[in-house]
Length: 121
Image 1 (cartoon, rainbow, N blue to C red):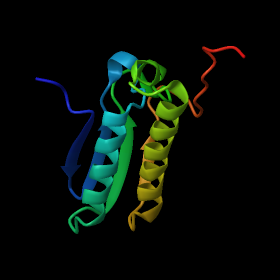
Image 2 (image 1 turned 60 degrees about the horizontal axis):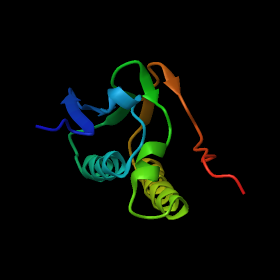
Image 3 (image 1 turned 180 degrees about the vertical axis):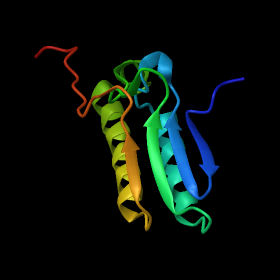
């Protein structure tokens, strides 16, 4: 059985979303980002939840975009990266729309950018 890419636990009105790809330092692939967006939308409408905490499993909060996923995609790197960035932005938009406080519990390193430098011009 494959682990959930984003785990959800709710305790006393506090929702905890855990990025759950510790083997790759919670790097963002399409599956994780789809799950994160879906969970955030679900929590927006959950009246029992008063706040949301986002954290990462293992040694890292998040390593940024999963470049292995990008290079393994059926699309060219640019198109795959564009799709990944669009889904990432959707997740950010869902956080901004959240009518409840959202806090990041940074448990290790957190990367803030995606750099694709495997091809030279």
